[in-house]
Image (cartoon, one colour):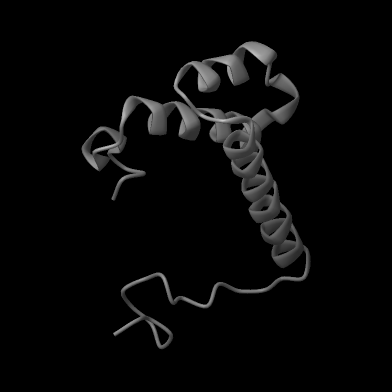
Length: 87
């Protein structure tokens, strides 16, 4: 739901800044700048928190690419329909 309507997710300005940054990392990491990171620092994110966000983002990108390369189908446990959906 939040992905469709980010403004309705109740995120703080700092949380939204972090999400904007990791979106940029996901879509075009080579376009990130020191200014992007400084904006996060200005929002009180620590170096360790920023690094952890980058590591987690990169890890999920890696897992998704490996799954795609091997043709692994989604399990459906995040959806609301199908045999593997949560009840």
